[in-house]
Length: 470
Ligand code: GLU
Image (tube, rainbow, N blue to C red; front, side, top):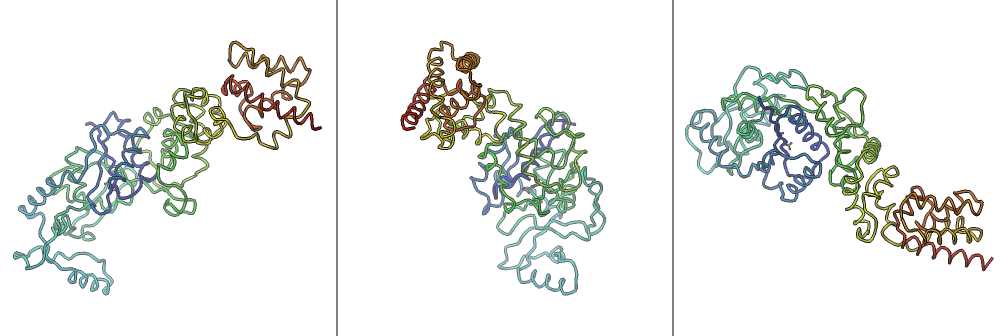
């Protein structure tokens, strides 16, 4: 059997972190088993589904690298198929038209509530033969009246539901649009889905879906219902707790693999390993190992993991990821170093790519002014001569690489019998405009000879001015 999983988001809102975790588990499990993963857009709610939300799902998935093995399925393209099944079921007596009016249903509900009963449709149209004037009917599925439904859930274990708790659910509304539980089972069968992995907010839908699967003559898939992700206060993770839209994390400069690494650990573990490559996740992930209990979202851990992935990423790949953040920060890449070199030098010093881009901006763009405190402390008259000597020595360098730069600065410092830092720090302040940067040789190398000389000249002007006025 080829394992086939699906991720079935409804494009009625942003792509939520919880949904991404569901998609990830579906995808990992399929890949772990050598199977296939398919994206299905559940866009039957015509009012709340928007093309922007569809794009957010497609873009988000592409960015994360969770690619559908087949063209995504859109439910709105399958309305004919759903109607055919409704007709078939009406013919076979597996479904019936219900002409109950809203008033009637309200009255039924009120009575049940008064008697302290569970509110449910009582099936009064099951045996109706004649339509009712002026009422456009809905179609209801004839749910079995008795017996139990046993869900053998991979995460939750065996969960038993009684048919007496369920009612005849609407499968087609009076406007002819199909409903969620119905479209899901038709699609799962048509798409050959073997494993349904989804949030446990759907567990209560499962017995209804299993009854309809029997009506279709289909074997139910294996189910796995994932526990919720909670915010720090124990409530379901939502906007109140901070960003939940995957796009926000992308904007902030999280790496897709760090997001996946973070999310995979919400409900799943492999010994005490924390940092996983995508390959390792695929190798180790098994749906049977998913934890029953809800897990909570921890932004500090996410930031830490992002840093770990930044540190572990090959420079070229990290540079490609960094490029758009540099551009967003205002850099023209053509006018500065290769982003791969920047990424390699800055990788130890940033939790996110946007932070990295901001701190590396001086490699591409001239800063307006040197930080006043840094200038005051480091660009003092005593450094005039060594700084000038360093400027000239750097100017004379024929090969512009880290080693030659390092040797040059060392040599100048020695010739003035000053500690390396006494020269390195003024150079740093002159070249970056501030007092914090990667090692001085790498910083000078990245900023490039022309800019370095120009900035040293500017700083020397400042030092001379101070020397004259003192
Ligand atoms: N469209 C449903 C949702 O977004 C998921 C349905 C399913 O996975 O069965 O919650």
